[in-house]
Amino acid sequence: MAGQLSFDNPIFSKFAFYSTLVVGKTMMMSHLTTINRIRKEAYANEEDTKTFGKTPGLLVKLADSTVERIRRCHLNDLENVFPFVLVGLFYVSSGPDSTIATWHFKIFAGARILHTLAYLFSLPQPCRFLCHNVCWFVTASMAARVLARALDIEFYI
Amino acid sequence: MAGQLSFDNPIFSKFAFYSTLVVGKTMMMSHLTTINRIRKEAYANEEDTKTFGKTPGLLVKLADSTVERIRRCHLNDLENVFPFVLVGLFYVSSGPDSTIATWHFKIFAGARILHTLAYLFSLPQPCRFLCHNVCWFVTASMAARVLARALDIEFYI
Amino acid sequence: MAGQLSFDNPIFSKFAFYSTLVVGKTMMMSHLTTINRIRKEAYANEEDTKTFGKTPGLLVKLADSTVERIRRCHLNDLENVFPFVLVGLFYVSSGPDSTIATWHFKIFAGARILHTLAYLFSLPQPCRFLCHNVCWFVTASMAARVLARALDIEFYI
Image (cartoon, rainbow over all chains, first blue to last red):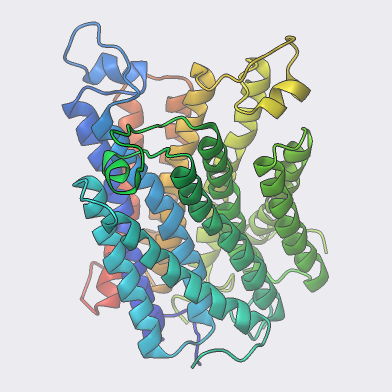
């Protein structure tokens, strides 16, 4: 059956792979934040400064530039990766063409990884801007197909 | 089969439609942020000021009131729209009554769009507060049914 | 059929239960924020101060320590609970062993509730740190199985 949410459906299997990859990438940001909070002694909570802080009498520090950059990157992931996976589930259910679907997943995953690199290494703009928009339009394209399928409108391929 | 996660199930199809609508609305906030960052020259990263900034020697600006309002609205979407879609998937699987289910989806989508308007146009409270709570209780009602179904408890209709 | 996304599958039913529990816990943070914004008159928007504020001429207050602590806890939920539910859906589809799967869900839900208590009551570290990492590795373990299943690699049990 086309559009089955099961590993018997190769499109679902590919979607599960790329989704887990980008969600996993998002999850890595937590550790990156922790490492940099420790490295720069930039803790957001008093109980953290007491246990992890090495400088005596260390205060909380909410505005370290490295930590805040990682956190902006992490929040951007939440704003883009979760919509991709949620809309993608409906998209897979809609029974899309296998090749077109796979390209949606691959392009999203690739552009999201590049987006993270552009953010973390402060690459010159519009590098990050382009990666962000590529991801956005991939999800928008899937969303358009889902809406068309739900409304029973003829749609591309 | 009742509760099937497939477009053959009309409740799933409606859920996919309204979910994609509210996720799409959430995604629009990204562009709204970008447009206002450019318009008010309020960039969060140094590499953005260099490429997009028009004023020479422009500094990063983390606290523009318009941009921060849009970002609060966006974060509120993440906090409410994603739970709706996730709990909704389980809710659809639980095989709810078609009319009751459709009203859950419609009320959520309507209240969420009103919430965004209330936020962006700074409408007097408790307008935004009410929209937020309507959405919250729609998701809570779906969650109650999912928990009851998982625990095999008799539940409304 | 193993891995079916339906309440006929007992693993799905358990997953729906624990997922809805932790998403519900996440949703409670919204009300906790509201209650504390009112209690400490720490409103983020001008229209809120006008309607809800009791002190005449009340200004917005973006940095109340109690409210910010609840919001950090809430954001941490978004960063960890949503990946758990999304990756978990694929994990359930992969047809895992019932006992192993159930332990994944139970440990995640337990550790997440402890994480919230540790955050809200400022328990000494590394209490919160450990809870966070337990949740992280539960989701990572499910993600590893999903990736292995998608790539058709033999995996544990």
